[in-house]
Image (cartoon, chains in turn yellow, blue):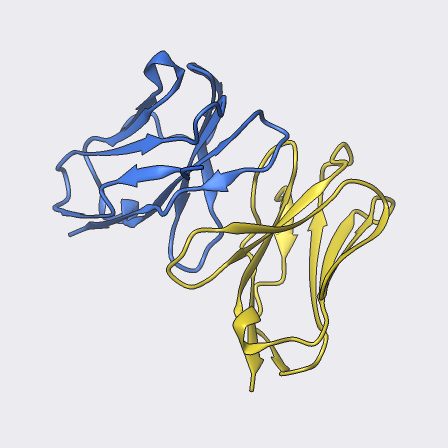
Amino acid sequence: QKEVEQNSGPLSVPEGAIASLNCTYSDRGSQSFFWYRQYSGKSPELIMSIYSNGDKEDGRFTAQLNKASQYVSLLIRDSQPSDSATYLCAPRKKLTFGKGTLLTVNP
Amino acid sequence: EAGVAQSPRYKIIEKRQSVAFWCNPISGHATLYWYQQILGQGPKLLIQFQNNGVVDDSQLPKDRFSAERLKGVDSTLKIQPAKLEDSAVYLCASSLESTRIKYFGPGTRLLVL
């Protein structure tokens, strides 16, 4: 079983909608996670980190961590075309990535 | 604050040739990572250094790949000999320590013909 699994998509949403990105993980010892965004042809950049169960909000982004179910999610409210990118999640202690989810926001 | 620097940005070689990539992490960052990202996939960790010591190289194909971080600052990643399947973007990242935010360099795009 891979350490981190994501639905590779593509996920397509209309502008202004909520985009929901999910990630499941196998290591119960993982306590916190990073979400990175990667534009085509660019390097990953950190957009959110979450260190405890529950939700963390930052502007239009909300990260959710559920340790019991071993999943972490990222919600993007009021999606914009500029949000179109691949989103990668990774455990904070060991930065091993899943395949990422390609998000396309249609104007 | 300067970011992670990598060179070259692009490299085209023929199979069986050798190639080397260089990375200069953010000043003061003790942890350095090399990743391989094949088109359409997430970055795959090749090797992690803590200062000049190797923490994890379990996914490094050691028959052809080697990496070093002399003096605990700059790092080089070498492939010898290259294969067609090594065509990828090689990303370097650094962090203050292993559990802190990782910052990525611009990457080196390698094409093996």
